[in-house]
Length: 387
Ligand SMILES: Cc1cc2nc3c(=O)[nH]c(=O)nc-3n(C[C@H](O)[C@H](O)[C@H](O)COP(=O)(O)OP(=O)(O)OC[C@H]3O[C@@H](n4cnc5c(N)ncnc54)[C@H](O)[C@@H]3O)c2cc1C
Image (cartoon, rainbow, N blue to C red; front, side, top):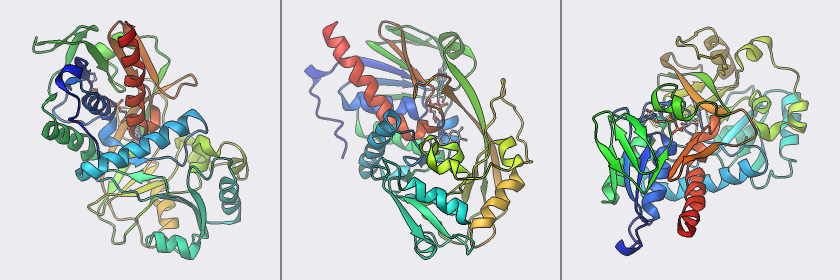
């Protein structure tokens, strides 16, 4: 259970203004409240609707790169579960994931995955077809076995961020959520929003996501970041229980955990999959619908229009591993995130004393945010005490 109330007034470190109400800003706000800060949280939109509301909701440990990225993911996974005990409304499920093999070659790649040095900390296990269908009644007869990752988990992305914010408002008088405020200028001491309101601060944390205009453009100019645009869709409710998140073997081509042995055992991706940088991921929402994706495009500027051509690939790929056909598509969308162009897991800069900018968590930002926020305050607080 997360303790938000124990810091006594004389211990309060000051007032932090967090700008950006996506998952990264929200976990920074939560971490700050937990450490005794007074928190003013500003967001341009009335409710979160950027990448943090458009993703799969996967708390995805299985595919993370070995080393620092995996350590962060495991720490973050623990913090998600800790919060879920107090804030069940965000829809956290320790559902795990199943990466599916439909033939000998894919099965050999999964066998190589369970032999990775860090397979134990990822909680990997191989399961045969019978066991896989017991874990996920949605899997069809074509599945010969799966890589089961017990560490993976799910939240409801459309609502999780807002639910955490409501929970913070409810639980702490030191948290002040101010949506519908676009910040137009900031320094380490003051933040000005579009209404002209000035918010004094002892510390400012700016988590702008992949915004390409306004203040983010100015502050992140020249930063080693690139935008990636992804397409996903959601179906009508599926008649069976999916349980764990489902991935097909193409995901081994994509996630860094499998870069060595496992990936080398797969034949090259099909031309279509390569063109759209597709991997099949399927998660079931609490209302029974399926979120299916995703494609990856690196064009700059990102396309504004949804391209329906890869959709047939996804439906065929999902139908190939599921027991019943994928229901009709109900909604489609594009989401954009920033990722670092160097080997950093994410970007943290301090362009001004008292101002910290955190961005570029890439396709793992939903997963890693709790651990990133903990790192930010773990670095800042000792510096401030010394200063
Ligand atoms: C389609 C898709 C699928 C994904 N799937 C997963 C997944 O399953 N698991 C995973 O771990 N990650 C996933 N990701 C990545 C993850 O969603 C992102 O890394 C994460 O949401 C980024 O969070 P953020 O808070 O940095 O950015 P955002 O969610 O973009 O939030 C930034 C916020 O800052 C606000 N803002 C910007 N400038 C200002 C300003 N000047 N004033 C006020 N407000 C401002 C914006 O309005 C926005 O709400 C996925 C991403 C996409 C696009």
